[in-house]
Amino acid sequence: MRLLKKPDCDTKKFFSTCVSGIGAAELQKKFTIFSEKVVTASLDYDSKSSRHELYMIIDQGIKDKDLCSPPFITKDEFKKLYENQVAKEGRPGRSIYNNLLITKNKRCPFCSVGKVKNLDHFLPKAHFPIFSVTPINLVPSCRDCNQDKNDDFSVDIRKQSLHPYFDDVSKVKWLFAKVAEESNPPVISYYTDSTLVEPEKLALKVDAHFISYKLNDTFSDLAGEMLSDIYNYCMNQFNREGKESLKLYLLEQKESHENAHLNSWQGAMYNALANSEWYCSGKFIDPQQQITYPKIIEQNENTGSECMGK
Ligand SMILES: [Zn+2]
Image (cartoon, rainbow, N blue to C red; front, side, top):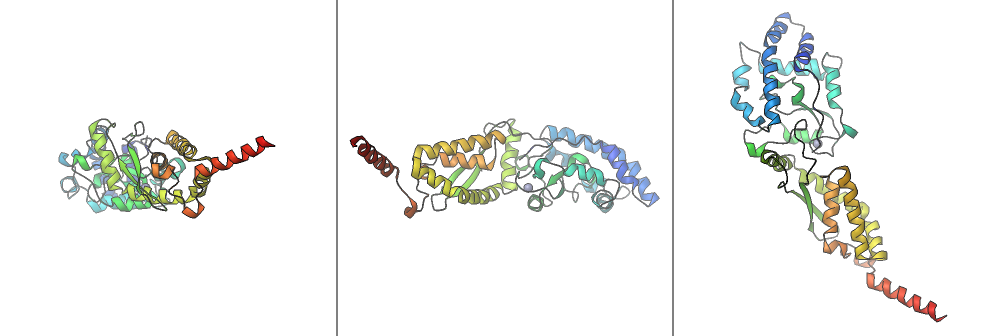
């Protein structure tokens, strides 16, 4: 998960911009009267998210049945406000939409590997229409993460996902991997250990996020591809230089990836390989391509004695 800078876009101003695009005067007026409620709800969202208590917002009566029903604004009206005034090209809110889509290397903050395709309503607009055009509720996402999440949200403290605008989990290590199957090719599986993450509410989010976004599947598939890409290099390293040299190479790769992102799937994979006696002993190599380390030594020693004899 990658932390994003919280949008510095004023909620009230953005709401007014969106409402300015509505053609029907009556509806526009209704939204304008309602704007203070949107701002208040947004402040509550901000404060609860900062304390990892967004799940509690449901208990505060900001559910659609309380606020988004006649005589207030309906869920459908909010949905159309987003679709027609924000998501559509050329509409008043579209430039903010485009700004919110920008991430480093276009990476999805939820999985850190997919390409950003659209904005996700962190609290789904189907259940929380009042946050339909609240900037801190609009998070760039890849297609897979958007689909995996769908309209899910949790009222359970143990099942909240990480919020990319609020939750920084980049400072301590919590993503790990192991060689799950010692086969050719080997299988890498991922898991979390959030013991070092503080506070505890944030640690719970790390574990829930990993499960909710099916990150083991995503990372394990990517690791499978990477293992195939590095097979020849690792094989040659082992055959030419031996076990310790291969291990050193794997640890250097781990360091390099972890320096860029402490919890990258690549860093965790290289760490798992470096700690695998099976992998470092060259067992991943097709037996027909394997030259064992002692043979190389033997060969060198023979060559050495021949030279000395001349
Ligand atoms: Zn994603």
